[in-house]
Amino acid sequence: MTLSSAINSAKSGLQITSLRADIAATNVANASTPGYVSRALVVSERRVGGTAGGVEAIGISRSQNYALTAERRNLTSDYAQADMLTSTWKTLSAQIGNSSEGTGLFKAFSGLESTLSDLALSPESSSNAAAVLSSAKSVVQELHNLSQMVDSLRSEADHEISNGVDIVNSALKTIQNINGRLSSMDRTSSQAAGLIDERNRALDTISEYMPVQTVDRQYGAIDVVTPEGVFLLAGTARKIEFSPTSAFGQGDTLANGTLSGMSVDGISITPGSSSYGAVSSGVFGALFTLRDQDLPAVGAQLDALAGDLITRFSDDALDPTKTPGEQGIFVDSTGAGGVGLASRISINAAIDPDKGGGTWRLRDGIGATAPGPTGNATILNGLLGAFKSANPINDSGIQGSFSSVEMVAQFASLAGQSRVQNETVLSSTSSQHAMLLQAEQAQNGVDVDTQMQDLLLIEQAYAANARVIEIASQMIQRLMDI
Image (cartoon, rainbow, N blue to C red; front, side, top):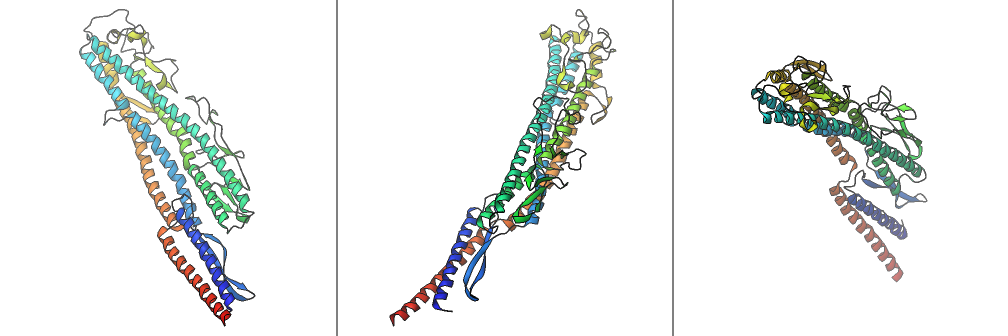
């Protein structure tokens, strides 16, 4: 090797160490950047005419463990679904209240039983009668509030599905564009590494909404497919179709066609559907479960509570003054019953002074035309007995024999059980997801300590190559001086 060759080799070493320093600095700067994968310079011996001539860079490698990332994405879908379901059930359970704390709907029903008992003991008391009316109105208001909350949450779920579809469609377009850009560049370049990171972030976004897998194609491109085999991107991005509902009705369901499902190229991917392509988890899985299953079930249970309340106080044997078949203290404003009853239940105008009635009819009967004996508690005792009697029910998941207050406690218990079940799933999924995230970060992410150690080695290599150039130059200069 000649002195000039030595100098050229050392210069190539300086160039390589400069590139390594740049990559190390980039790694450290992006240590906390989501989706960034640690990079390293790939080098090879440079040969000129069959003779060693230093070192050259042949590309940039990414330290990504694709199998680990794919598994983490699957758990991301499961975690996102569990998190949304748990959050919603926490909200519902808190609003419903519970018997142990005496809150929410249970408190309203217990209050009605208490004031009705007080009035039965002192039927002449106008203040006690007013308290019963106030308690009855509280029950109605709680049922209305919960029913409206269920409707609102269903509407929000439908809206969030629409937003999610837009986000996923946009992410698929991003992946398509990156595939195209990668096909026309050196896929071992720094620019390509950045594009692959960006593509991975788009895949991470999609995996929050639905589980997906990738298929490697030519020129660094990938296709995106669901685990069920529905392609979301095959060369070009396919559009997920969904039609949001502008006016949300209590009777709207996917089954009767008033609510939209999701589809791709005519293939249904609606979670919970019978289609082979039905999405199994992710935010979409949670939103469709809430919109089409969980929330309608809660609404049906509320309607069952309202219907039971109306029925208990409408028994003709309790009040001989009312027309047979006429409703009692509580009425359905439409008389139709069924879906949405909890939102329609109201106080019979005959006992409400604000609507031209009188609270004395609680004592004397709905159909009474004038106040009767103030000490007569016959009807009141009958009403109290009806409220406290254990009536059988098998409706919307509420099964057994309960008094009105016990039925509300059972309803709250069912909501609490759903909350606990979802919290258990979330706890397990969250732990697994966190473990995989940590493992993925260890494999794919930036270890700042390691990068600092590499920089010390880079510094030493740079100094050594510079020293080679210095010594070779001195030797040449000495020859020149002879």
